[in-house]
Image (cartoon, rainbow, N blue to C red; front, side):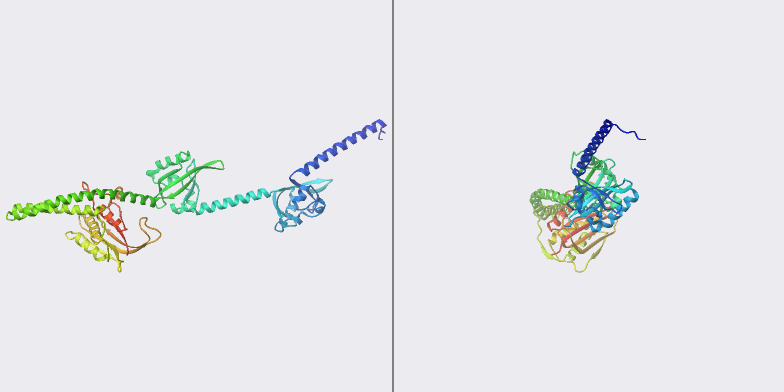
Length: 504
């Protein structure tokens, strides 16, 4: 039997119940305050996905003004059309598996405004009835930030992939390549996948690697930003020169060097050509003065020799000596003539001509007393050129004579002439357009690699103990004709001198 409570006990129990109710009411007030002031939407759904209860933030997220507008309705109703099936499946999945985590769904209001929502839901039981407690968060700002980041990454990737300069991302510690753009793939001749398996040591000549690594380390320490004229080796082994602008960056906790490669090979050649022309001009001015004074001296000598020859014409022995002196003086006069041609005073006197006959006559003259033979391969319909015939004849005769001297045991010199067309500045020193290319090829010992760059320098010669101005004069003459002369050679494989003259 239940013990009957006394009045005082009953009064105490009532007071306890009242205090418990006040505490419960206080907790409910705090709970409601917390729920209604948070920026997270709370909604409770039944097993059909219909709203049983929700806070005001969820009402706002659903695109409505008060709870009565969404009570008893399915959440799918204010879900964007393209997300309805996904949301319905999520409700079913939550009941099956007990929860849903980080589900992104787009809600849409009556005016068509879309609000992206992140949903986390858990199955709960209230009075033995299964329900879903769902927390919804407005991720509009996050979505905008993600879109801005994607846009920024897209623009960066477009710039990265389409930049004219080559770009490589290098691991600072291992010096291995992590990423690169299309331009550097084309520069080096590797695919993207191949480059990602390479490192700094793989794209520079071995003999230059210590210097390259030194520059790399200086850039990594921010001591320098640009490493100039760095030799870079392509996949095929050929080398070009690049200015490399690098800056250290940190990605995912790792330090990299972001390097921009700019091919300066043509610029370097242009600077070398400019320096060579300045050197030739300076030496030419000196040579002009020397030649003028030398000619004055020789004029006196030759004049006196002429008088002496007349006086001693009967003395055969003395006459022969005088003739030898005269021949030596005439060789000096010829040298003075070369100096004048080499100097600025030897400006070409041009006229428009066909060059085929000039090439053949110059070669015949140069080889008139030689055991070396020649073969011509001259194209039909060669274009006309605007040249100083005497100067160009000297150039061709000089090249043929050099080829002759390169083959002391005899052989064949190949002389070729053809029409060519330069496009897109294929040759750094020549304008676009039509040219005559004249090639003089010997089969001699060739020119050492370390001497190729000096071959056109004044008074430089590959012959031991000798100097000359023949090739320097040729270089100067061709330049004054707005053309170009170069040489190709390998030791033991002979040499080819190429002349390019613009077609008129």
